[in-house]
Image (cartoon, rainbow, N blue to C red; front, side, top):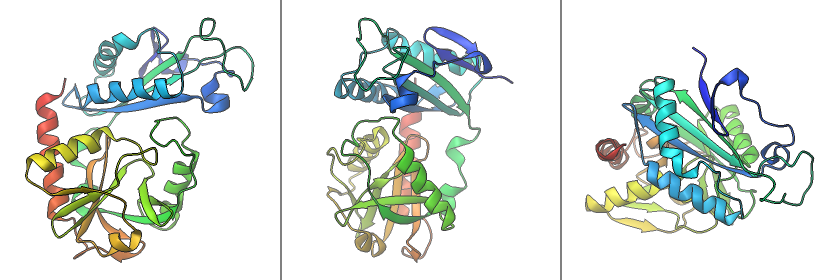
Length: 287
């Protein structure tokens, strides 16, 4: 079945949706994005993603697309049109196309943002076998730009990190700067030691994860101890367990870091419990 996508006010077959070669997302990576999970035909953490999208736009002095206030309706329509039970909705806003290439921003009165949304069908998204087996990660140097808190489409280095991990026979990479872990290539990073959950504090160094915020809230409500601070790879290797969070992987246990198994080499109880809590509670309030 051909997917229906959304482009600047129109619902189109994917092979009919066209964006200008002069669009700034293509030429300058001048765009932001969000990914929202769909479980049981409903949107997970939608409001959080919308708030972060608005923040990203503001941080880049980018205009909201005209359909900003209709985004919930658009998401729901795409779920319906593409018959998505479990999956993802990708949303991207760019500064648009001025009809030529220029480093200077185009006049927002003359050039409107480009808004694109499309779905990805992922049956059984919440039942990933990886969640039961755990994932293996490597560490790599973090050489990204300094505003990782803005969810931009500048994803070349994270993509390279994924490929480095794949080449090493692993699943993902944690990035390290000044001796401390910042985050994964597309996720936030955590370790557990003595029952305490440790994750890097919020700053411009990491993405302010929507799933991160929810998981930490649920952890505290479950009387789990949380400490927000930086940690090293060596500290992670000595931890009892580790995990990542993201909109598409929810809570995913980590069982090996740079070739060293964590604990007994199996997913830890804290990560598995948090995954269960997150999925249960998120489904209750999905829209």
